[in-house]
Length: 476
Image (cartoon, rainbow, N blue to C red; front, side, top):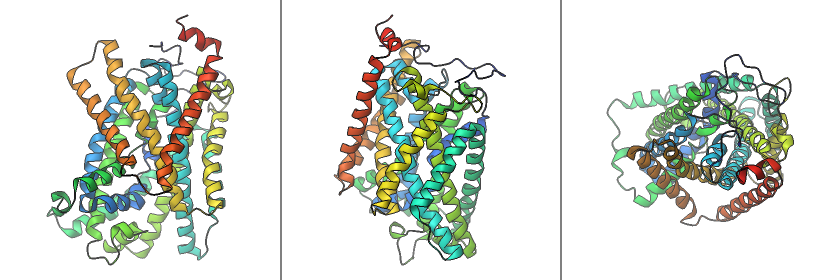
């Protein structure tokens, strides 16, 4: 069943100079660079060289760099499918609106809850990583440890205030923090490569000793480092010229992040050759990278600071994106209508911001206070989040050819891109389920499915009680 744009609240491209009415988001608030910052911040580019590359190397070994190259290509395919929608429609509902309008509305609800789980648990994961690096900074500079529960509370509270106060302020802060962090790590990585010489390290591409199974496992982890690139689509009501700015943000965030990860992976594998502790065992790979590149000890502390601000930016980006999905679902009747109102003066979805922040902070605080380590929290909640991202990517890849067919624009190349992206994400999902990982990771798929079905049931019942949606579903 196809629903019109009006049913799911999908606005037209707002006119320049338009002003938000009471209860609406602030239109034309974000420049193209600020829109790009949303996707880049949610990818959390410093997270890969700080943590992710070590995890991929533990699975793929010398195939680590190749895994990031392949992951970037497959994720770009998904981005191209998303842009089939983003070039022609803009909405705060993100992929939820795309799927709902061009598949059955129930698939839209499924996509909406998958996105919410993805954004909320990514925030839970990255706030734990922030607390870890905040502790490392305090220990290096002052010789004292931070209280993780307090660090997480302060980070989420700060991000909540920024997301409540002004979407433009939030975007500018994310852009500045990410640029500074990525610039420092890029300088260290490039110096490592230059010191090695311009002769390529072919051992990283020959895949000697790397089995297809190990490469597949590493590829799944590498894809996970790139998820979140689509979050710029949640700014459809707030970006300037959204039908141009958002597709560019979706595409270029993947390409730029993938290139950055490729260079960092190549440099880290080089730097750890001959080290007593392997890359897969290192808790501070950027410290080793800085030392081997000839940077002073202060550079290691600065990379920790860069990682901390990167993870804080990711928390802010997750709260921003989750709030827009909650806002749109509230407007559509899939959640309580109170969530579908924006702050009168700030033009931000303030109630949705508060709900998303509480949902992100609560599980992280509970598990930390019960004794779970910060890296374990990062891994567990990050895994749950990736199930959500992959679910919605699969749905949007299935919806794209249906959408193009209704427009009479379905071509062989567009269909092939959709099929390849669908298969790649399906393989990533299977790769995360088999071989069965050890506990607690073996329980996470069941927890994710329970959350998804609970949310789906809740919204289905809520939607059935909404007179507007009942009329829309019946064609009235």
